[in-house]
Structure formats: structure tokens, C-alpha cells
Image (cartoon, rainbow, N blue to C red; front, side, top):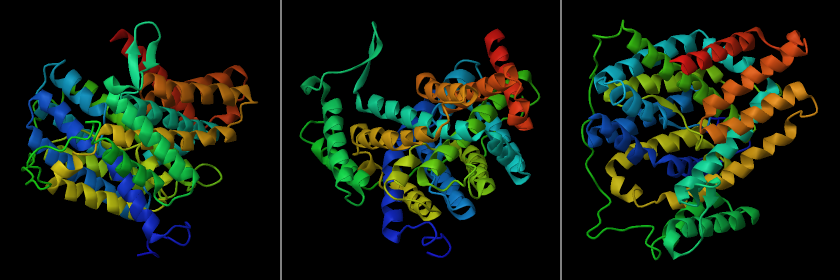
Length: 434
């Protein structure tokens, strides 16, 4: 096992990988509740989607483990599930079966593109400084996710966003702040598994504050419901509406996945000197396979999760951590009430702290060259402010091509990057006039 996953080569241990896999699962386990909640608004059964979420996440993460040997976990993506429900079903008036068909088509196309190396070529065309910027941008992105999940950040009519007061009226924020302090102390003292221990301790601290709720007659066991099977509607696949839905799923998933893989690999120190990801083809194949499996079982697009960085920060460097995460997704199907005890206030400190770890890549960005620095800055800024990894890549690539164009440094830009910039501009124009 250690030879297959290259423990010695990547300077890791069995224990670190287990802790990393558990940490990643705890940081992203919220998707087991959130995804069914969003998709059920489209008319789908909550329990069936819950099962589909767990199975598709486990399958995709196992493919990542054995085909790419990367500590990256996958599950139905946030944002994509919201588009599925609120735009396609409720906004366009389509059936959820129609939306699932578009997800299936996207996944099948991605499998083909992954086998022929098209997605890998797109990833490798992204300039080195932009790759580092993606890591930093994701760090800020998951930080704001953590702050929001904890209830520390709140809407403010004057400043758009502000911090709440850490008092009894904001118990979740207070517990998360305590958890962040504990996590920092544990990490500074170099306690093994500090991030995972922080999640567990914060969950316990939340009990007297009423943030961690243990119901009366609590039982950790539950029998999972049957998922959907091949609930597709092919009647409208030649329509313009289907193409719009299909393209949106395709575009968002492609660059969410690329951005996450670049960020996690940079964080784990697995990228080569040019910023390339090892086994990129297998990594990209995993989310395509997961998307097809998820569509067949009844859930929206499966993609790589930025929360994987929390497991990397806890020590994970190989696909064995992904195996651990996948197994826990299966276990969670039968222990849903137990995992449901962990509040978002307990996972928020992990996300916030990992945000710090990921922003360290900013020191490797060449800001002295403005044609490199400006695109890097926009990539970093857009991700948290637009609440989207893919939008950060879009604005980064467009500005990179623009800066090189006006300075006539054409040779700096890969031909695929030129193509991406043109496609991104066209997409922005399409969105503006739609």
C-alpha cells in the first residue's frame, strides 16, 4: 500500500494520510445535507438525493485516489446544484429529469475530453503566476466561506459585509472564534492532526452554547434510502434551452475543477517546477466519472472540493487520504445522525486557517512584472468577491492576454490561453445580452 501510494517519495505516513482524509471529510461533510436541501426544492426526494450524494462522492473520490494518487475529494458542487434547481428547474420551467440529462451529457463529454488530454492541455496552458494566484484566491475564497458558515460575517447595508459581535446573541460565531484560537494554538505547537482535533474540540465546545445540538433519544444509525436510477428526459436535447444548460454546467465544472486541482497541488507541494500537476489526466477523469455516476443516481454535477486543502494542511499528500474520505462518505450513509451533530461552526475554523496556509503562495508571484502581476491580482480578488473559482480564472486569463497583447509580448502566451481568452470574452458578452 505504501509503495502504491508513494508514501516515502512524498514524505508522508499512514497516520498522516488517515488524519488528512478524516479532516477533509469533516470539512466537506456538510454537502450531504446541503445538496439534498437544494435539489429537493426542484421536486426531488431529499432522502434519495442524500444517498446519491454520498455514493457519487465516494465513487469519484476513489477514482481520484487510484487514478491520480492525489489527496483531493469530490462531491456534487455548490453553485452547480443551485443553478440546477433555481435557474434550470424553477427559472426556466424545466423538469429535474431534463436537468439531470444535461448533467449526464456534460459528464460523458468530459470523459471523452479527459481521455484525449484536452482538459489537461487547457490546465497546462494557464501561466505559472496565474496558477499561484489561483491557490491564493482559493485560500481567500474558502476563508470567506468559513467566516460565513460560522456566522462571523454578516450583511451590512453600509459596508456590504461586517463582523458580528462575539456575544451570546451570536453563539455560532463565538464558538467558531474559540475553535479558531484552539486550532491556531495546536498548529503553532505542532500537534499532529491539529486541524482535525480542532474540529472535534469545537464540536464539544458547541454543546454548552447550544450550537452543537444532541436530540433526545439520539441514535447514530440510520438506513439510507434508495437513490434514483436513470431518471432522464431526452425529449429536449436538440433544443437551444438544453444547449444553454449543458454549456453552463460544462463551463463552470471545467474551471472549478482546474482551479481546485491547481490550488490543492500547490498547497501539498506536489506540483513540478512549472506548476504542472502529477497524473492530471486521472484527476480530471475522476470528476467526469463522478458526474456520470451522480446523474445516473439523481444528483447534480460532481466536482473537486476546495475543502480538500484542509486535509492537505493536516498532512495528506497521497491518494490514500482520498480512500479514507471515500470510505467515510459510505459510512456516513448509515451514520447520518452522528455526522449531522458536527455544526458548521466547528468546520469553519479549519477553513479559515487553511485559507492562511494557501495564501503563502503569494510570495512566489512576480508582481514586479505588471503584465504578470495585474492578472494575478484580479484572479486573487475575483474569486472571493464573486464567490466563484471559475470567474477568478476567467478574469485572470482575459487580463493576462490583454496585458501581453498591448505590450506586444505575444510569445509569452500559449495558443490555448489565447483561445480561452477569446472564449471567455465571448461568454461575458453572451451573458450581458442574454
